Length: 276
Image (cartoon, rainbow, N blue to C red; front, top):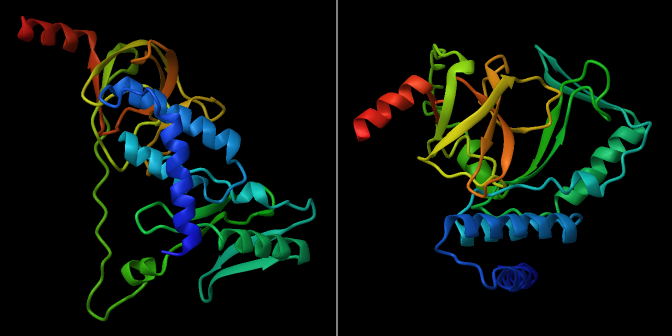
């Protein structure tokens, strides 16, 4: 490990130790509150530091929380108003990226900052999202994501051996649940590494949370979301829940998420009868 990386890790550990003074590590809510304090520190004090995700990863590991990734690289590069990039797919030649001078300079500057970001093997790769319909992606362009990955990524994922493929067949989509969202009285979250709960929320797995209200979800809603990768959003509803810190919040959930168990009032009554 280079000396500068080791020094950064030592500095992160010192800052983390100072933030965790007096924290009851054995209490779930205390750990969650401490993690949120670490995230707030990262946002306020490290918003232009490419090492911010190393600090967050260390905090998540120490406190047993889901790791959050801050997209700091994109904010460190100024986007010229005249920058234009266009990504399309040519059936005969593959992806084609076209840019004007300012667009290509912006892309070059992004890559120059991205390459300086650390890429630990056990943490998510540093990356930048360029979304379709948003500058610098122009017109009918696809969006794209730029990753800075360690060399081991290419050994694991980018080598095609003759007669051997590491591509796994995708699991079939689960059938739609036959449930009226208006009848849902409580929810229970199961631990699912693929679709974790939003870390800043004070929620635990395998615990019932009462639903205070439910409404349809729209793309304009500014609420926490727990989405399925293949979902088109048509089965998303916004639920109002009280968390373990007694805070009331809204979260958008997919009715077909296998990591969530929905209970109707009738289900709860039957559960109470069994327990008594």
